[in-house]
Amino acid sequence: AQSVTQLGSHVSVSEGALVLLRCNYSSSVPPYLFWYVQYPNQGLQLLLKYTTGATLVKGINGFEAEFKKSETSFHLTKPSAHMSDAAEYFCAVSSGGYQKVTFGTGTKLQVIP
Amino acid sequence: EADIYQTPRYLVIGTGKKITLECSQTMGHDKMYWYQQDPGMELHLIHYSYGVNSTEKGDLSSESTVSRIRTEHFPLTLESARPSHTSQYLCASSEGGGITDTQYFGPGTRLTVL
Image (tube, rainbow over all chains, first blue to last red; front, top):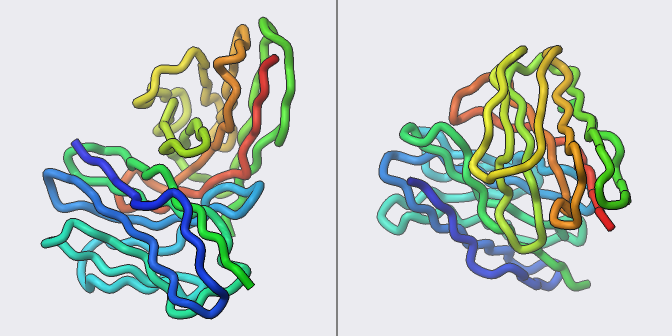
């Protein structure tokens, strides 16, 4: 089985502050991990994904995430929040033994001017 | 950029009505999906398709049905809508069936059944 836990359904940061959105996964086999973003009234779009290789993954809009196997985590970060980053962020996992993608419950990011 | 479309974007209907939610993609992707999204809940896969004439039920039991007669088209039908069907429905597609493939999502249909 595989699962994803996103800590914090709502996160607020000030414009210019560090963004940290937490994601922990559970998988019995090596996982593939994704972060998707959903802007209001839109579908999800891929921010970044980890498949193999380098554990620090860079995505669009200045976001990056680091795969830490020992901590079973894949936290999303951005050094400086921008107003346009306000959206809902979904972490997702897929693995070889379970040929589907499992999404987390999402974290809504609010950016305060 | 991904091109996947859903219509209608918003739908309010009465109980017992038959409805079809449309989903089309212009990318030639073989695999398509329908998810149900409710606030504070994970996305639940309700149907998927590997290609024309192939459809499977997802993890979440759903009273809806789907068809895949053409590669680009993956409509979802509710024969008799009920208030419990009120939700947001997201359609997605991916180029292959691999577990590392990126899924491309449509904007969603927000369904309200009175």
